Image (tube, rainbow, N blue to C red; front, side, top):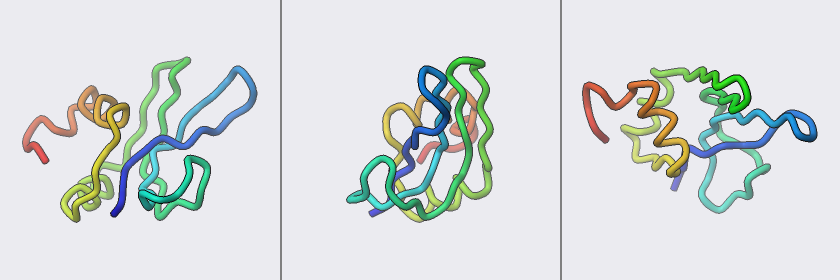
Length: 82
């Protein structure tokens, strides 16, 4: 099973997160299947590769709670709910 989750990057006290598609049994910093976006909580910026995210969601990937909230704020679920 695949999940969309956050992967921590950046330096100390200055974290940014990548949104990645990753196997459910992998750890947070483990090997990801594909990078699909990033989230910077300090600048409150988000970039998401919408076609790739929709592809993974259609194939059954489950976003974590935080990623779901980020994608909802980016209005990804506006037209259709998964």
